[in-house]
Image (cartoon, rainbow, N blue to C red; front, side, top):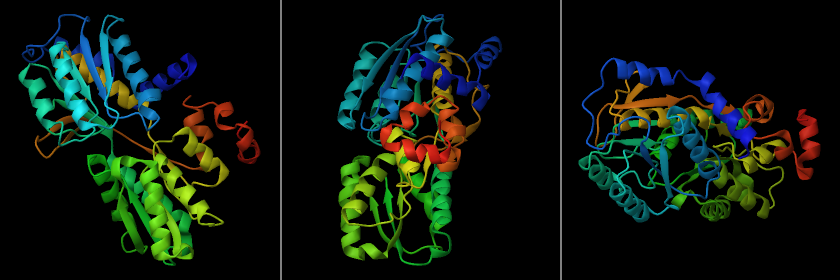
Length: 370
């Protein structure tokens, strides 16, 4: 991400949520709780940042630089961020936590590969006096705080969009549901939200939980669904994210479907936005990463200093192991052809030039993307 884009994306946080440095300051003035043994004095804190994989573009392009930038802003550039990416391997991520503990970080931000498998490592960190912020996925174990999007609402937004695309044909034919990985608790929430909208209004011909969220696995599943149901019987596809939508659309094209049935998505990845422009993908879910990253950074900095986070949170969420986890939930937006300019372009996530390459120039012109 270039400097201009990063500045623009970070600026979204200011207007998107009421999380501020002042909140951290007021908590400090009010007298924070007893500092954990790993608490740092002043701004010279060490933050461990663990992200789950690099298959999805968002983590390296958005989450990492946004979190690093916000932590730097909050600490006058005095904090150190120690980063590791697990590349979709839960065992690797557990080892990374051990390394962070050995390196005596003051706080951990963890986006878990496997929410259940990380629980033991979270406890190790807590036992070492290191508070843990669960990022994007609700990790199990004694976490101190959590930030993500309203993930059930994500599924509802996707389901409503698919119904809108199907219109009067919702009862005709069958749809295929391509859910995310069973190791990701968010995937279950997306699925739950989508089913709450779709059940009874469409016929679900095939449904899959896609191993590791991989596009190639979604492609294989979609090819199997078309073979089992008959390609002319599939009227729409619920895809839980954009990466899988790409694999699904490749399978639909290989089967000779034209026009393509509506396909949903999530994450507003550049390739997904371009497919929306081209009319190959109906929608994605735009999740403004800047406010999510800002929330994680602010909670992590406060916890590292032993300060309260009451002024930052806007919700309390139960995990399977921990009740009422202090949380910040961020709203989401349904991204379609009609609002690309007012969302990802306006917020500086992508420039028109990035979206409208030669391949998509004509479609962009039709949509007024200039």
